[in-house]
Amino acid sequence: MTSETDFIAALRAIATDPSARGLIDDAAVLEIGGKSLILTHDMIVEGVHFLSRDAPEDVAWKLVAVNLSDLAAKGAAPVGLLLGYSLGGESDWDQGFARGLGRAVAALSAPLLGGDTVAAPAGAPRFLGLTAIGEATGPVPSRTGARAGDTLWVSGTVGDAGVGLRMAVGELSAAPELLQRFRRPEPRLALGQRLAPLVSAMMDVSDGLLIDSARMAEASGLGLEVELAAVPLSDALVASVGDGQRTRVDASIAGDDYELLFAAPAEASTAIEETAAALSIPLTPVGRFEAGAGLRIIWNGAPLPLPSRLGYEHGA
Image 1 (cartoon, rainbow, N blue to C red):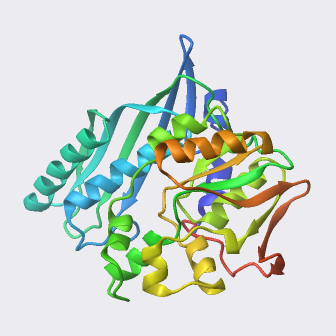
Image 2 (cartoon, rainbow, N blue to C red; image 1 turned 30 degrees about the vertical axis):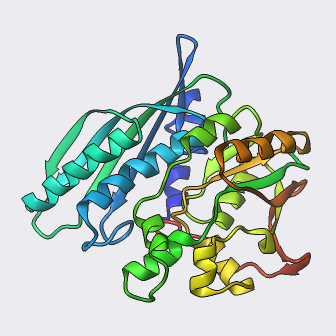
């Protein structure tokens, strides 16, 4: 199977327009009439991103949220959505999805503008796609702008959705809010707009803190050191599965957090902390960019070997 990384590399020879940003970012940036339009498209697949027994209302919310998370990483506000939907022959599920979609677009202020529906073969897994269109009125951060000496920050807490997935498949029983983090992530739209003028680079954490921070470092042509002891965990996660080195490694590779990951110079720290206080969202420094290449992880200052996988990659 072709890996996600290999396939995207093959597409770069085609996506040569400057708006594509070399397919390094999760979104395209189209400059029109002095405005920056942000375009992103994400898909979620039954059995990969959600379970067949998940409520269709939750699936609809997640589809909208993961796309808007890409807009948040560009400091953009939503303008509209285009839906790609596979009809699977279950009208109750389809109607539940439509109800959930209506609630999601209202709650997240992202109007549905159109899209397409197709009939899928009976029994086929559901493939659902959404294109999100946003507008940025200020700087549009990319993954590529980190500089040596910048601090790596992450919003909120990580690992909750990973534990939530384990709950969803019946592997463990834990705090119900962790299952909610897996099924109904919250895109950090307001935070992204406040951070955009302060950061050197920004993206969201979709596949795992370690793999996504490594992608930022590689895109920026830098090395990166991450301190696992600094990785922020929620009280609910610690109460459910404990704390320690193994827990923080697991939290850092789990994915589906949809928090914001960003690089910023030291002089931006005060403004970042003021932003955290203003929005009541924790922002935690977890690493430092440096000259060179590759990812290193440490535990209370001591080096650790990298885990066998850094996060989730399609086709890997």
